[in-house]
Length: 88
Image (cartoon, rainbow, N blue to C red):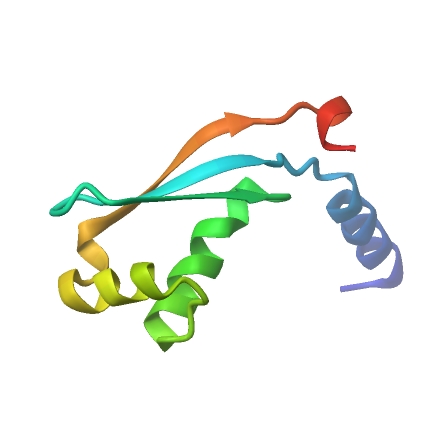
C-alpha cells in the first residue's frame, strides 16, 4: 500500500459511523436474557462471544449458561440504537 492509499484508507476508517445502543443476549433453551449497552453495536457480539469462549466473561450467570448449553444456544439481539445526539 502506497502512502496516499494508506492515508485514504485511514481517513475512510475514521469516517465510519458507529452505532451505540442497547442489546440483549438470549439463551434459547432457558429463555434467560442479559441486557447490556455498547458504544459499538456492530462489534459487541464478537467481544462477548470471545470472552465466553475463553471462559472469562464477567457475568457469571451468562458464563455458566454458556458452559451448559454451548454457543449455538445463544443469540444477540439489538434492542435500541441510539442516535448521534443521545450518545454524545
